[in-house]
Image: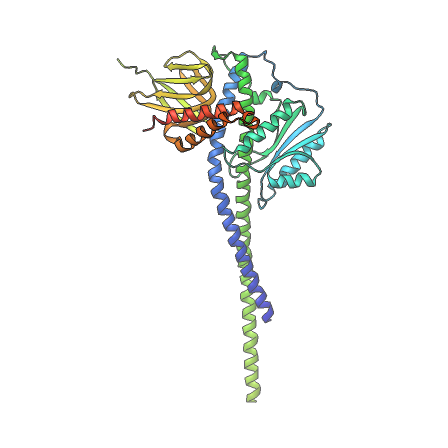
Length: 286
Length: 140
């Protein structure tokens, strides 16, 4: 009896500690999310303006040949998998990895992989993928790693080593919505170029449209990659916030349940002791 | 009579919006030299170099920005400037820019093979730092 009571008390304490930790982690994730959410929104505006502009220039320079606009015969594909550095964010990283493996499996040619995020690197190694580059996650828009990653992706594709680059990441839409996305990064797709039927504007181009387009295309790729990196980081924090929130709720439920058991056990113990005393007294009397 | 016709202008970088408002004119550091934009300018798309971007407000006040690379677009009497790097004069870290300029100058003087490899990069870094210091003089 006494042992049971002690054990229950210890269990309640343990769960209380867990709750403290998950609650703290939730708060940290919320704070980080708030900071990065603003960054992602700013970046999205920039990207939208750039895409709009690119569409205008592309409409005026339709005959321009650029490697980013040409679909090549596929002999090797590249995929950049962007995820989180840490766990405790539910199924976030695992889902990304499943999405990546699905893409790799669907390719008829050899696939090389660049990973962003320590968790993704570990999963990718375990899955036996051919990793040609790995980076930690990026939280700030002025992080030098963004330029490094952009550089590696561009060289990868421009050198002809891979003929296609796919990006697998978690697009940050809202705190509750951050779907896994698998999209083609290079060559640029018509959607990425924003080829909408807009009215044609007679611009003065400085320099001329073809050259301008060559200046803008790498910028568009860079903006897209930066947005993917930062957006996924925001998604990871949002996923962690939700996971830790659920864990805190679970801990609370468990504490209530365990406390009820504890009270009952204590009451039983007291009743048993009382019975002992009473029956002992009665035995003496008779 | 002072120029009073205004047009909406936004200056945006990946890190955020630097400016948004009605202005009467702007001097823009194009890749091939500075040019001016006033109300009712013809539609234009131009790349930016490293330099000082100045906008004039209806009350005659000026705002100054250090920019490096990017594009400017004028369309329907509206201007959008997308800068690769851009800072308000007030936000420039002068100490950091001075340090960067000094390091770049020391590198350019460097004799060893190794130090000369990235000469263009160092020159760009120097141009950016000098530009920042110049624009920072406009801070209020």
